[in-house]
Length: 127
Image (tube, rainbow, N blue to C red; front, side, top):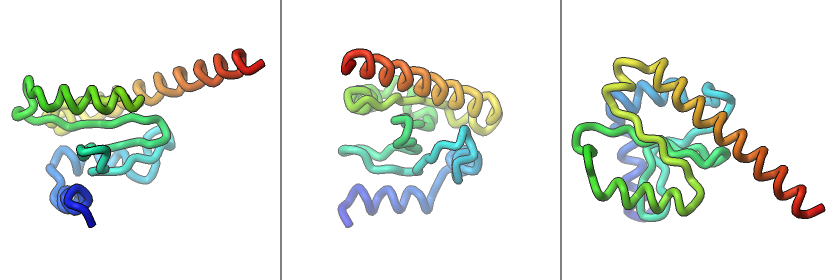
């Protein structure tokens, strides 16, 4: 097991209160029928939550992330790989879980529309 995999396993065992609360709503395809993974190693990073089907990463941020340059580099890495990064404040998860879930659902629906558009464009180009 490499260091990143071992760290992600440790993070899954020691989730924050905000991560636990959001995970209760994301696990077992409860949101829009899509599968999320928690503490997923990706490149040299670990995503809090990742949906491979829609290529969405959800990052929960506390105060230490405010204006963090490392987060910007990480987001650019993910976006270059075609992954949409969604950042949510821990406080929002703890105090407004329904609003957070609605926001995540809107991103999933946006990705659905984008995927349909791209498939349609590919079909038009191929024909």
